[in-house]
Image (tube, rainbow, N blue to C red; front, top):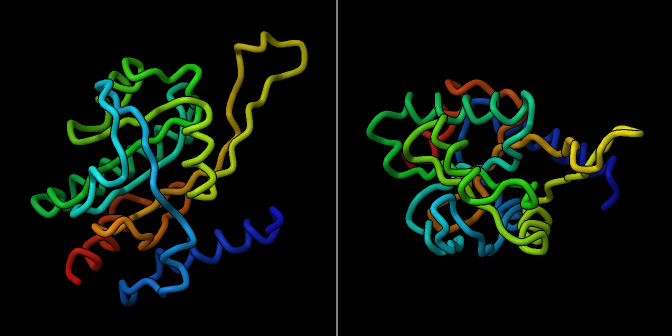
Length: 193
């Protein structure tokens, strides 16, 4: 699928994911995003998608040196978790690093700690991160300004938050900067199913 078509698809899903209505995900979309993964968490423990079965996963892909977009979305996730109160026990907020070269587990541990005790940071080898990014259809590209030190780079990436069900299947997504209140309301509908 080419990038313009992907963009239109993601935009359509983002809009429908935040519009009030039924929480049911059309079966055709359940397999569009997501899949098995095996990554290292922020404590150094190997984790797979199977470790989170029985709970909803609220997943965001980003990197710890992201200047503004990633922390903004993670703060919205944290706000949603806070708003859900006791219902949040059924949700695991997950930050998947798309910059495995810099985002080691110890770096992730410090970073995700800023957003809440329940946040999980995941990283892995370049191949592992590439595979999970592909499964979730996350575009990412290293950007080095002309003449800059190659280690001083940004990562251009999709800014989408995914809600995966207790069965590991895709439920909905949230566009960049979706307020925590909206995320919490939408998740509440899925929790009520």
